Amino acid sequence: PRILKVAAAQVGAVDRDADRAETLARLIALLDQAASEKVQLLLYPEVTFTTFFPRHLFTSSSDLNAYFEHNDDLTTSPSTAPLFSKAQNYGIDIVVGFAERTDEGKGYNTCVYYSAAVGKVINKYRKVHLPGTVEPFEDPEAVNQLEKRYFTPGDLGFPAFRAPGLLPTSSGDPVLGMLICNDRRWPEAWRSYALQGAELLLIGYNTVAHSPHLWGTTKPMTEEEAEKEALFHSRLVQQSNSYMNSVFSISSARCGLDDGKYNLIGGSAIINPEGHVVAEAKTKDDELVVAEIDLEECRQGREKTFDFGRHRRIEAYGRIGAQ
Ligand code: CDT
View 1 (tube, rainbow, N blue to C red):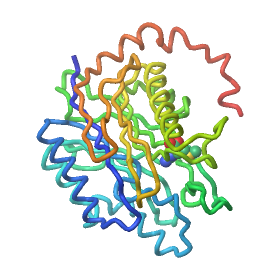
View 2 (view 1 turned 45 degrees about the vertical axis):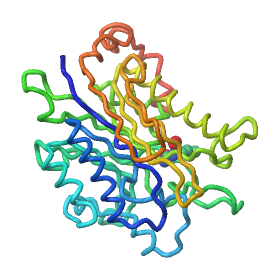
View 3 (view 1 turned 90 degrees about the vertical axis):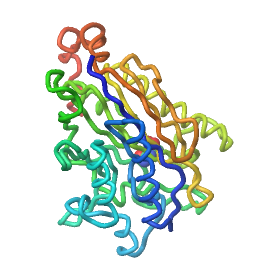
View 4 (view 1 turned 180 degrees about the vertical axis):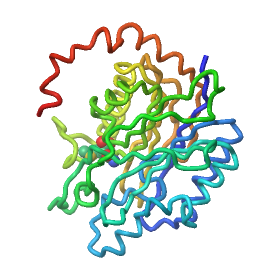
């Protein structure tokens, strides 16, 4: 067996004007709990340190930039560094999402993998599939998602990587991959990692519960019906893609009612390679979702139904890459 204790650090409501230090204290409280439960790898949501700001239109660049971090400063800046140093002290690997501003002024929706064994960020992923619009909707009641305005599509591809120090050396280091929110709905993203032998995918998200302007709906829905549907689709894509790629996955939500009115789904979950839910959030608040998983369970699918080398028919898939 290659057993790992993993967890999603689900984070409840974070308002637009939330105090950064208070939010950081909540993130650290989840890390403390993870340490007491002997978790080895902890996943935080997309844009971990603030509210999901792309729902707002910012006309001042300094107001907007307050939500961004410079990648090089992430582990040293006073507003983010304490999470990494605490993780290092506990010996817990963490995945953290943030809005990244590059030297050239580009914005990316990014996450990093911090390895406690190495004492550094060892991998970075930039969200490829950016939902929403560049311009806000004319309807003042609409919930916006201005990711296409604030971010550039990720340019790093889907780089699988090995994380050292989590398993005994004789077991081989686990092969991991990261996705961010909307990416989880795209089978190409999962398959790109699975083809590199990934055993566990880590996915932080912010998913609006009801937004008829953004989501395709065949009929008008109440807030409650829409939230149920959004949760259904979130689970559906995680379970089906885990199964079709014989890979474990962890998803971690930023959820709850931001500013008392923007409703985000919960549903953080740990799914096994057969597509079954191993653990799932019970609340829409700060909550640790923990499970012990055996990465050997990926083999059953990879050696039988989804043995890519034996059964994939790439000569028939030309259209996927070409268009
Ligand atoms: N953050 C993010 O990517 N959210 C989207 C909301 C849907 S926008 C149409 C998601 O796919 O969950």
